Image 1 (tube, rainbow, N blue to C red):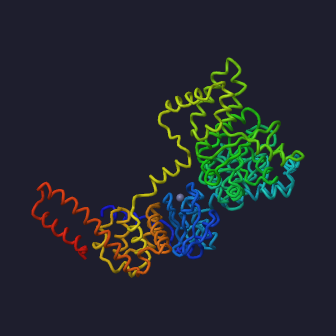
Image 2 (cartoon, rainbow, N blue to C red; image 1 turned 120 degrees about the vertical axis):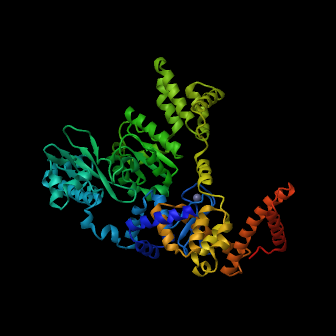
Image 3 (cartoon, helix red, strand yellow; image 1 turned 45 degrees about the vertical axis):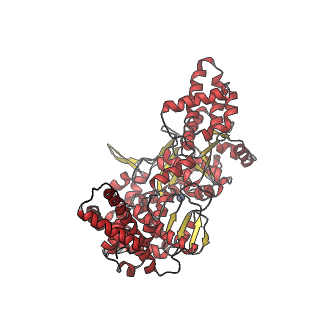
Length: 606
Ligand SMILES: [Zn+2]
């Protein structure tokens, strides 16, 4: 009970600082969960429930259920569940606030807290970014943008293409953008915070100067920053917005906002290095292409891809720096459970190849010929393996890489690898095995199994279906809630979280306010339990189980009855042992007799 009290106090506190629950309600009534989920999962109806293959774990038969009536989803395989907000947060990797804004936009709901009093809060980084983007676009079309236009023309980027990808030009002046933004009503501190200006000893100056600008969007279509390619003069070839409130290089990929649907549809992504490569690939019909925003691919980026596809083609520059960068990125991906295929382009970057006559066809061929990771790694070490001074380190590097992969990812290529390394299969296997043991008990199970094991540990609690079902019935039905005193039910619920929910409901808490509190606390477990109960109710209704002809009240009575019996049986078992050992007190013996009689007589004491 203490935890419950704390729960309420924190809830009440958080309540005060966050936005109104009404917005959440309003969005929920306007949007259908079937539509939201349907953008990501193919759903088929069976009775009241919609079923599909879970987007959060690998499965062949659908165990992912959506209840339109109750506006929740639940996966019977991995246990994930919740409402539209939870779903969008999970699948797009968003914070609640971002999911709220996104769904509000979709529903046409004006959020009062975030947008209502903007003048008071100051403009957001996003507002500044949008103003900057428009400035860069205008400059590219203006008189000062001539050199940039000529550069883009040389790269076969027409005016229309430039507009489509919102390319821009940051003039080579010190403070053109800075001045423009100040004029636009933004504060100096806000411009600095957005990373568009840099504070200097003689005042602030523009971060991007003399660069062609590529706006960078998050997967969810929000303008988060910019990449700039220098035209001439000193400075790094590429410069990005600094890491900050919105922009995080490691969590985003260039053009993912445009590519994500196609990646899901194709079941694969193409990963390139440069902005221009990505744009060209899109123009040539490879619309599942994204670019990494720096050199090394991060775990977070790999996880982004993994959520949308199981296969990733890597198409980096053919120079050796590109190759080594690609290799590291590939191991990151493969360890995330994304199968990696490396495309080998001779003589140029993807942009060059695609611009050739029949470029798209050649690119397609290179995709078909792309090498799986173990073979690619062996191929790029092949030459070194023959040079006495380098053979040793090349071999070690390759074997270490192979040992870091799951046996499932390596075994199809054992024969070829043996050929390249000059080993017999049993020797190669021994080498790999020794390295695996040295790294000490890492998890090399196949990713699909790993996902399942992980989820069965973390998400699928041993909560009984009956307890979940009862909780959701109470959640849905206020009449039912008023028919039970807490002490008639709560002590017999074994799961602590469900016990808390049921107790709160029976003490008169409204489901809406409980839900709001969980949201504020970032507690996803409780809503997950309610969603699970919802799915169980709907599934059983279709299955026409023993409850199907009963009223809600009769069903809940039966469940409460059976939970109570279960508890009493446990207690009786304990007492029986004591009786056997002659260790009971007089009271305990009385209790033993009473329980024995009740359970035999089918009267559970109500
Ligand atoms: Zn699942």
